[in-house]
Image (cartoon, rainbow, N blue to C red; front, side, top):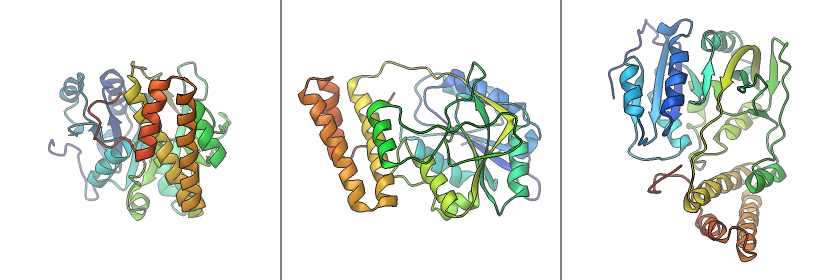
Length: 310
């Protein structure tokens, strides 16, 4: 790890931006360039969690000497990566940011300003996230029900999106993904950090659920803009796709168990197992679904045991 490059005053940096990246060098470069142009840059610590990348990420690291890169030997999943960086962070405000998201210069400082102004009512704050066509990106939702979680696992679409008025000064949502999400380290530490039963999916839903349980809000500041660029979609073998789908399903079952009880979570997971087996037996992408069946049966999630991911 590099020596800390943030200019720290008596109380250290104001915000730690945490970017978890895996084989996303071009997106990461664009993301970091935007952060380097941030207002009050000298008060922002940036940590990149390189989750075992095998691309040109080391070249990106050389281009940004003031950014701290932490390197994992292989892909352990986003939740574990964010936890490592969160424990390392020096600031009291944590800003989880996807490499695909490019923020405008005022985003970090203005979110921090709002969080500091309303500590008793705000649990998290986000900018308006737009897609490359300037439309609201699908990052804000209702907290998922069991039916929505199953549909999301089965079809890739099941969460109920929340439309945010772009002309409003302030809005609230139940669930914001970690694409651009500011929260206090105090709150995350109070949860004993992110629950690592979630590998790739649903840690953000759990944090939002806990914020709501604590009587606080997840705020969106629509006048602060960020752009989410379309991620590259690499070809993935059936074994990798099966592990990712299993991770999503096992995480969803953990979410159900935490909030609806152990047996609800067990029956939810059994439903996924029998769904994948039924698809395999009817020859619907049999190789993939048999692999998924085995992964769900063993409770496989993204955890570093896979030899290759994505």
